[in-house]
Length: 239
Image (cartoon, rainbow, N blue to C red; front, side, top):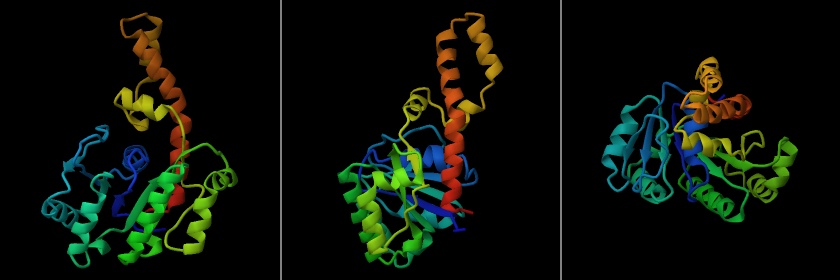
């Protein structure tokens, strides 16, 4: 098990799954953690309660992270370099972060960006045990299929030994995440809705019938998604 009191979700690529990792994977399973977003352009999801701070002034970021016992820092791609500059300007500050999570995609560009960030963190003295890649938009269902899908990435990581990678720490490519964003809910939000009430709205042909049908469809698929995310979180070994 690894300590996860202070977690940074980072990446050089945009739309690689940082917010998805924060909102759907981490936040529901680490309910005592504060969420801090570093965003110049506030395009992140508002599905969970979070404090948003621009990365150009590091002092409020420093204060927030140092004073918090449990925090998830979601660093936007447009702010990662400024954030790292601010962290390295404070000697020892990088040691405050227990785990750096780097979501990546099957495409070559995001994987190249991921390896560059891994190398940069390693050069700054971050140990491999504190850097974990999160595979996102995965099509394979078994660990073997996932390794094949990200074959080049696995080979480089195993040769360089600068970070951790696990084929079980993989989030599938599912349209449900887009649908949840559209209805402004997380996986756990939609599962906590009263299914009986939803079905009554459908049966009674209320004005909300169309929306109720949509929510029921999402809810029925969300059960399997939650189980998958539980498995991913368990494989991460956080405590």
